[in-house]
Amino acid sequence: DADVTQTPRNRITKTGKRIMLECSQTKGHDRMYWYRQDPGLGLRLIYYSFDVKDINKGEISDGYSVSRQAQAKFSLSLESAIPNQTALYFCATSGQGGTDTQYFGPGTRLTVL
Amino acid sequence: GENVEQHPSTLSVQEGDSAVIKCTYSDSASNYFPWYKQELGKRPQLIIDIRSNVGEKKDQRIAVTLNKTAKHFSLHITETQPEDSAVYFCAASGGSNYKLTFGKGTLLTVNP
Image (cartoon, rainbow over all chains, first blue to last red; front, top):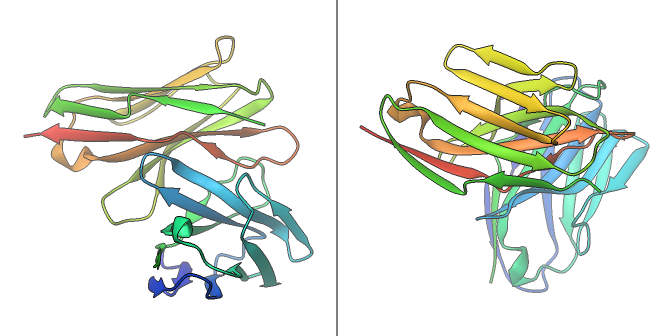
């Protein structure tokens, strides 16, 4: 869906650098999520936010932080990148209902050298 | 927390055959079970979902079944076509926060 966008789409960085991945959505959804995808490991939840004032850790939050700047924007930061954070990162959004569909952004491929 | 197991990890079928992917979950409070399809280089997209008050749901060539007693659910694709080739993820959510827990995915290859 073009309604969920991520920047950058690809990024190569070095160990120890600070990196920010950004997600924007025009769906008007309150809920936003950050996932990490690694081959053979599926999609793992890093952080999620149910509204601007609500931030929650997912199953693999260590080494990551997030900021919900507005309803439409949710950023993921790696304060000091390490090689095992090399992965494909997806942002997703959903409505307020507990069973609402999650819509994914196009993904950001991050490589940490 | 919730744990979702998905099998098989890879599945190869001939065009026109059926494909079945199975998932089990651990949290009896889970009540929403979506399936996502991810084509190569693309984002995951919802293809079908089922809620715990329903045992089976169909959408053209795709069906999902749910057995809450056994805590497992399955995706069935009939008359497979090459464009069905993709990675399929099951997921489960429920309880107080409705965050999705995904299985590790199944790479389905449909051979012409």
